[in-house]
Length: 75
Image: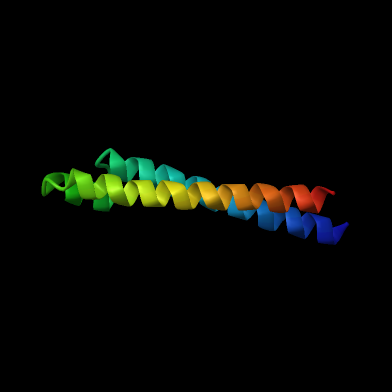
């Protein structure tokens, strides 16, 4: 029972961190946050969009990996 709980907690951590990365990427793309505001003020929104897209994809992959870990812990 403890192994299942630990596996699910690890999977939930991956899902939460992936969600954080997605939210961070969206805020960067919109010009909020430290990096997004800096790039927005210096007219580099194309760079911000590129960084945001990479962060979004990375977060999505981490969420998918966490969901797979969750499913395997439940089986």
